[in-house]
Image (cartoon, rainbow, N blue to C red; front, side, top):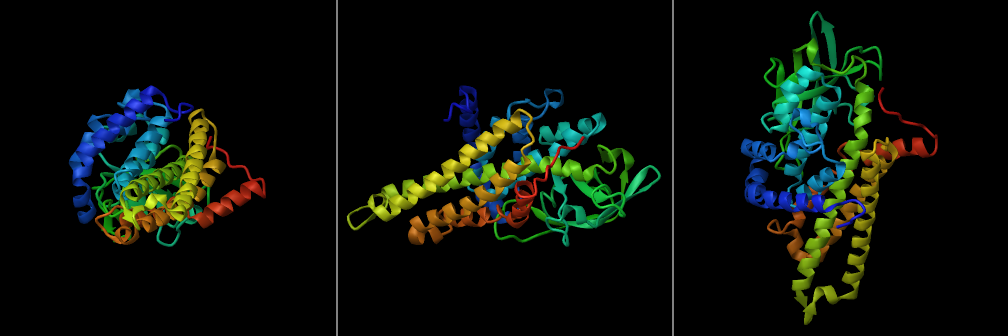
Length: 388
């Protein structure tokens, strides 16, 4: 392990978490992939082990560890070959819970963050809309103040944990006349009247429940506002840096898994009297794949280091997601090719890995949107700053 970033304590954590996944998660993956839902017991087991609290304050039951524990957590989740299970977990921990921790007041942290860390409540983040996609500022959902509550109307789509979660972190326009400045964020209980969810059928990530959610005159208590009214857009933008880095880390981890699997297969598969890892064309392809994965890892680790010390790395995180997800798709495609016909068989991991990986360049901001964001920073010298 790279001692520039990881200590012996990190390595011990990786070993114990890997063993936990093999014992508690892997035996159930095929069932969850088939059913499109994850049994509740595993959430509580994650909570009991402290895995949901890795990056959260000790005051709320967390461990308050550095970001390289999060890197390990994400990397190992990618190596059990269920992008859907991994997505459900990290969407809860690093999307929904991030807003509770950063913008929630003490009551909200007691009522939602603590049970989330314990695995007793599951959250989802609701930003994307059917007609909006990556255009966050153009969202149509509204939450209009009415006395001591807000009335929420609108819809969200492609929401991970959108069907079975216990609470929703929802972005909506509190001032529809404004664009960026008119948006706010709320925490909403699943059982609130007026909420309905439809499960979506997906190409990959099949173990996770992805939903389209409708809000019909949903009453949200004013105390469930996260942070300040009208600050929703900068809150979302502030956390996009970590979300994009997370997706970059996920990408390099699944690509590394693909290379490692291909190497093992090639060392055992024989053709024309020798193992196929002796053929120059395949050896050179593996050399390219391994080099690209290693490049992504080093870049992502360096961004993690900067983010951990408080730097605002929105440009670098956007670059990470753009390139890491693109490289992962190609590496996994090439790794599947290394297996020949077996790569196309469901009993081998590459078919699912290829499907699951394809969401990388789409979710959390498409590659096309990221290119424009990066172009604004590189060409137009636009500066994105954290919310104040």
